[in-house]
Image (cartoon, rainbow, N blue to C red; front, side):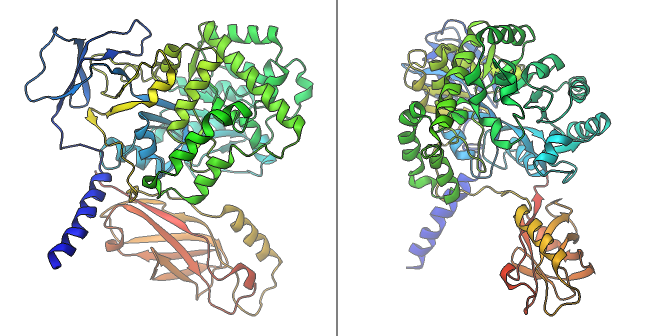
Amino acid sequence: MHRVLWICFLVPTLLLLDALVPSGRGQQPPVIAIEGGTLIDGNGGAPVRDALIILRDNRIETVSRKGQAAVPAGAQVLQGDGKFIVPGLMDAHVHYSEWLPEMFLHFGVTSVFEIGGGEQWGLAQREGIARGKIPGPRLFLAVGSLAGARIAALQGRTGIEGPLASRQVANSIEDGLQIIRRFIGAGADMIKIHRGPTLEMYQAVIEEAHRAGLPVVAQPLGPTVYGREAVLAGADIIEHAAGIGYSIAKDPSRWKGWGSIEEHSIDPSTFADMDDAKAEEMIRLLVDRKVFLEADIIAQGRGMKAIRAMYEAQDMRLLNDPGLVYLPVRLRRKWIENYWEFENADAAVVALREKGTENLMRFIGQFAKAGGKVMAGTDTSAGGAWAVTGIGLHHELDLLVQAGLTPMQAIQAATRNVAEGYRILDRQGTIEKGKLADLVIVNADPLQDINNLQKIEWVIRDGRVIDRTFHPWFRNPLPESAIEGATWVAAVRKEMETMRTPSFGYPPVAIESISPTKVTEGGPTLVLRIRGVGFTKRTLVTFDGRPVPAELVSDTEMEATIEARRVAQAGTFSIQLQNLEPLQRSQWGNSSNKAYLLVDFRY
C-alpha cells in the first residue's frame, strides 16, 4: 500500500519537474538531423526539397540536401519526408506574463518581443530562459518605455514609478536621455517611445539608441508626433501602425486629440478616413526610410464580423483544453470577451472600426507590394489580452495574407523581418549555417495555405525538440512581481486625507512601494523597506503568508526583517500588511494590497 502511494506521489512530481525544465535539455543527444522535407529558409527564395539540416548543440551546423552530407553517428534523426521546415516563429509585439510560455511554444513561437517594458521581472525571466532555468520562448525586452509629460498628465501619470518602470515620464530632453540610458544600462534589447514626447525629444532619444546599436519602436500618437513625424525622426519600427492613420487622413482636424486615451492605440478608426494619395506618399516614405510596420490586425480588428467568424471557435476550443486549466479565469474571459466587445456598441462606431480595419489591411498590403517590410505581432498579454497567445500569431498571418501578402511574405513577417527589424538577423530569423537552432516542422505546405503553419509536427528551440504538451500543473518558477491594486491604493490614500487625527480605531493600510524589489537566492538576511499609508506600531507584516519582525519608522514607512533562510531559493514572495481592529473605516478591511519580492536565481 505504501509503495502504491509513493508511486502515485512520485510520478506526477517527476512530470512536474520535467514540465518546469526546457524540454529535453540534457536528455536528447547534442546532434539532431532533419532528413528530408522541404526547406523554406525565410530568405524568400525557392523552397529546397529533400533537405538535410544538422543541428549541433544550439546551432545550425549545416544546411544541405539528402545525399550531399552524412548524418553524424548517434544523431537523433527526424524524418522530414512530406513535411515542411520553417524558421522558428516570432511574435513582434507581446506583453509577457508568467502564464504564457507553453502557449507560445505549442504554436511554434520560439522568440517574443516584450516592447511594453519588462522591468526587473522581465530581466529575470529573460536570463532564466536563456540559462535553461525557465521554459519559454527567447525573450527580448524594452525594459521600460518613454512617455511625454503632456500625455502622461492626461492619463493621470505624473512621474517615474521606479528606475526601470514602464511608461516613464520625461519633462525635458535631458530627462528623456537619462531614462533611455538607464534602459540601455539595464540591458534593453530595443528602445520603446510611447505617446507624448516632442519631436525634439524623439530625435535625441533615437540618436542615443542608435549609438548603442539598438532599434527604436515607436507608438507615435500625438499630441505633436504622429506616424510621419516619427518616421522622419528616425524610428525603426512603428507598432500598431500607430499614427499612420492620422498622417494619411483626409481631414486631420476631424481627429483632433487622437491618442489622448489608451484605447486609441489599438483603434483603427483613423484609417477609415484614409486619403489614397497620402497613403501612397506615406508608403514611399516608409519604404525609403526602411521602416518596419507592425500592425496587430488581430488586436485592432477584434470583434469585427469577419474576424469573429473565422477565429472565435478556434480560440474557444483552445481555451477549453484541460491542459490549460492553470490559466486565470479573468484571462480566459478577457480573451473571449474580445469577440463580444462591440456587440452593443453604437452602429456608427462599429461601422467606423470595420472600415478602419479594412483600410488598414489594404494599406499593409500596398506597403508590402511596394517592398515594405511587415512584422507580425499580436499585442498578446495576460493583462489587456487583445489576442490569444500563440494561436493569435497564426491568425495574424492569415489576416496578412488576406491583406495582400503572399504566404511567403507572411512567413517572413514572422521570421526574417522581425529579426532584421530588431537587429538580430545575424543570429536568427532564417535557417542558415551558424544561426541559432530554432525551427518548426509542419505537415502541410504553408505556401499553399498559410494556415498549414498550425499543422505542427515538431518545434525545435535552442537545438532541442520541445514538449508541446500543455501541463495542467504548469507553474512558472518565477511568478510575476509587482505592486497590486494601484487604483485601490490611490483611493486609500485619498480616504486617509479626509480622516481626523487622532481618531478611534486603526486606519486602512496600503503598500505603495518596497525596496529592494529583487534579490538573489542564497543571500543574507534582508531588511525590507516598505512605504505606503496607514502604518502603526501594531501593524503586522507578513512575508509569504507568515509574520516577520517589523519596526515602524513613520506612519508611511516600515522596515521588515526577512531571514536568510526565507530567501534561500528562487521564487516570488508576497508581502502584505494588516492593521488590528477596531478599524476607523471598516469598508476598507484590515489588510493591505500585496507587494512581491522577486528572489532571482543565482548563476
